[in-house]
Image (tube, rainbow, N blue to C red):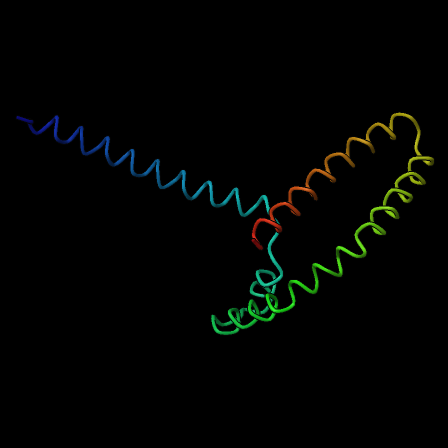
Length: 126
């Protein structure tokens, strides 16, 4: 049989556990949303204060054109990559050795972030 102090201790532990779990869920959601840029409809929502009906309609419009936009991007993506490589090479020629090392590190970070966003976008559309 539980006495009053044990019962209180158990309730306190359960309360602390519940608060910790809730904080973990909230923190995880905050970090997840911070790590990915807002979608176009999210940006419209923030800037224009869309009503729920408008938000749903905008999402439908974007979804309607999603495949066409992806196809266009697939056709121009290699050209953009080629141009990006040329631009980066030209910028590197202006830099000293130390700056070039920093630039390479920065590009590695930027490319990694872009690849993660693209993977996330591809995953979200499946």
